[in-house]
Length: 234
Image 1 (cartoon, one colour):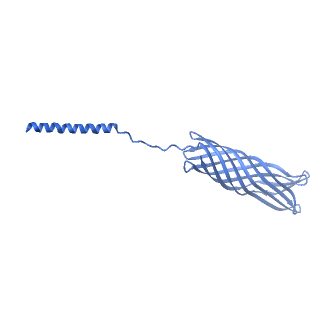
Image 2: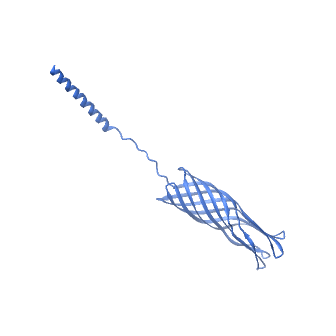
Image 3: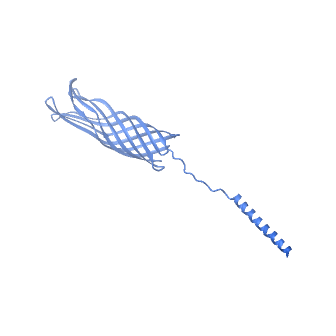
């Protein structure tokens, strides 16, 4: 009986040892669990979008001349009104810095009227920016999905200008003007493809003489703007 008991203990020990070895073998050969990490967001790429905003605080002192003689100032046109349009651009990110180029085109109703009594006559002046656009490099600094940036470059737009004296039209001009723009903004990426921005711009379409030798004025078409925009990043 002692002999059979010893054999039984030996067989039991052999089985336990085999099971432990098998468990170690399975543990040693099991593949490691895959670890997935979300790729870091980048601003690099093309984008396109839409925007809307408001232009305000134009600063055009209206002074009349006739036959080269300055008659005096009659007041100020402070153009203001709504604007809206679309933009397209490209960004390239280097570490935290983002370098880009953007072009936009805006429909606008930025205007002002001036009516006054001057040298015994009723004088009415009107200025309106019908549309404008810009082409601008952008330089930004990004904290992951949020970027602040500065921008500036070429501006162009259509400006209509008119002056009536006692109901008779003496100045009536509608021309496309070129000038410059400068501004800054902040943009945030809500997803890998959808971003939103808040932007300030100052647009100056230059000074020029409108009218003729009978009656003329030096017109300055400029204004400030604040706008919001949505972009789709490709």
